Amino acid sequence: MIKHIIIAIMVLLAVPSMAQGEDSVATQVRFGYLSYEAALTAMPEYESAQQQLNILREAYEKELQRAEEEFNRKYEDFLEGQKDYPRTILLKRQSELQDMMQRNLKFKQQGKLDLAEAERKTLAPLRARLNEAIATVARQRHLALVINTDSNACPFIEPAMGVDLNTEIKEKLQK
Image 1 (cartoon, rainbow, N blue to C red):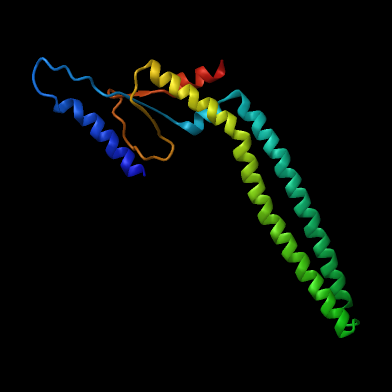
Image 2 (spheres, rainbow, N blue to C red; image 1 turned 45 degrees about the horizontal axis):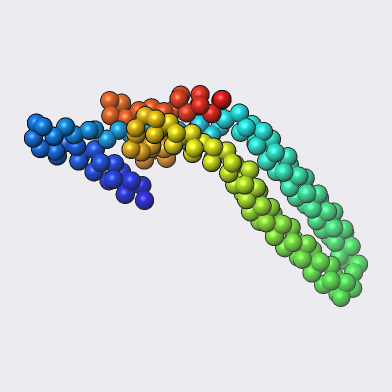
């Protein structure tokens, strides 16, 4: 995917130089670039969103801690009494411990999924607002595209050909 984007950029940049004749004035394709993540984290609402997510994350961590302590307590009780238990009770307690461990693991996995979904939902309006700001600035500056520099897909950008939008986007989002 990134290769296709880079190829498309190179093609767009090469097309104007292929124009022939003095009378045909080729307009250079201009592009912008920015760190999407830096712009997102600079938004005023971002801190509030992170606080909401941290509260949810802490609730999951507390519940996991409580479940772990309960499991440890039951396991210690099992170890202390196992020599005195008849075989049937021993097997029942082992099964209970295994079930409890599996439920705790399942809860932990589901918690990770729930937290990821909560983060996606919480940040969705911020991302939409950021995307609108990028589109607005790009149209105002007559840019063909805007490149996200976070993934290091473009290790070099010629400053004379591209427009650094980092400051402008951050300022627009502060309003």
